[in-house]
Length: 211
Image (cartoon, rainbow, N blue to C red; front, side, top):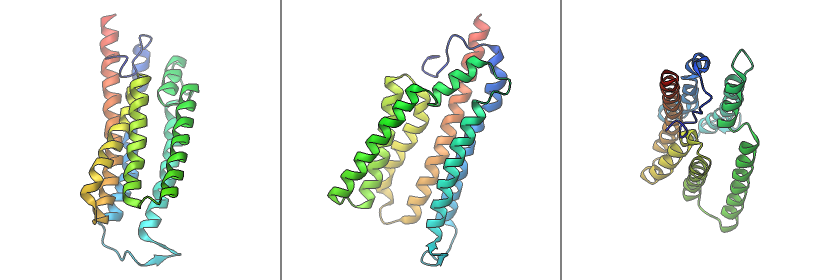
């Protein structure tokens, strides 16, 4: 169980203060989810353009910018050389893909996505099935990585991605519901990462008590 959660035998009590400090940091992923849900539910003219774009398009651009900013900020936050034990920084980088293994995983995923987009364009796949297939591809890739590399924190991405893709057929013909589901997916990611962080802390505490 410890290995499944990314808890190694080298973890000690000096790690706990930092792990507890970062355990709720995953809730930042609720921010893009909340924006998507608000954009879907707040009444507005969906055909009205502002500076050439409708509200939904502006919301999408804002979410993309926030996602890039969060990925950069959170990675720097949990790997900062601010007094954390060097072993904790190395372990955190490994679990967050900031390593050689992470580079190859992301490169493989990028190649898969490139082939998928080229395939979809070549065969003229309609947007709805293409969009659902995109998240099935990303979710299954994260799931495979979690199982193959025993990097179970990847389930924090895999399960919400797959659940979102499987729920999309329920929202056919309901664009607002599709927006809500996408927002809920990001909130599920936030909850998953925070749950994993709490379980990791409990495992380290038990490991320390056993020694």
